[in-house]
Length: 442
Image (tube, rainbow, N blue to C red):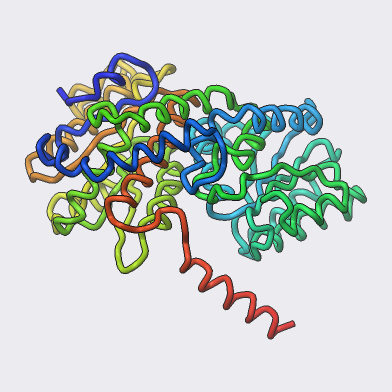
């Protein structure tokens, strides 16, 4: 059996195990020492409840003012007519929202054509996509209340977001006239975007200025569009609160975020520079992509970094499984899976083509997937490949818990690696040049 954290093991939500991490308890204790003073910093930030330090995102799950503002605006903007929420953003402005949406709805949208409201993510400047989206809005939207635009940019000056917003609002304005009432701007308070929205009578929600985009999913960035889409944001926040409390614990054995950071750091110092998130549910793929940005932007600087990758089980056992098991031992893997499904499906006992694979008759697909995951972990152990495991219940609370766990993990990992996990100075490199090129072509 896996050695699971005792505080988590008997409760619903998220379970984290690390007995196959190939890191001894003595080494965990040794590496935890630099984190003890930092935990005091986190606890001071948590106690203040304010937004005055880089770590202040840990206060978002307990911010009742933000919650009230989000719920009040949702009541004003959402009616039973709502069919589509257009989420316009990029990076931290949309990855967390998409991660949560896809766990419950997004992966299944194509086979649930009558389920509304749906979310559409405008997170690319690809001309074919935007052309199709514009045409869709012009032909399929019959009433302005059927659509709600969430335009999200922390700075308010993100090229991709501004371009997409103007294209989408123009498509709707050509059909309905002024659609300002169907727009919500989510940005830093008093950013240029905020001010222009106010001038046009567009509703706006503020992101605490000190909170970076990749840490902002528990702010209006994620809460408003998800609430509009019918998600239980109270459950998401409660899950995050649970990991917030555990992440503030000085008892390392009860602190999943600290444990995970220590394990990643230990292997990093020993030459393992790839963290593969091997996700055994396709609906969680976007959660892996959210974490990819979180890790990439947080610790990839000053010549250092751990490369985050995303694999999907069991699909990628047939694409890169050979590489992982037989190739270089340069990866630490985090296996992520759901607990057994609530609505399971069974292979029929009266199979049309029996005998192709033995012992499948009557088996549930959860049993099959669990067997594949267990078999994969046994294979990893036989090759002495380090891994940890996260098992999630199938509800919004578990996803909120996982995301808070990983955000605090990144704070600890930055401290261990000696880098600032809150800035992204090199992202500006492409942004500055892009704006220069566009101005030259004007």
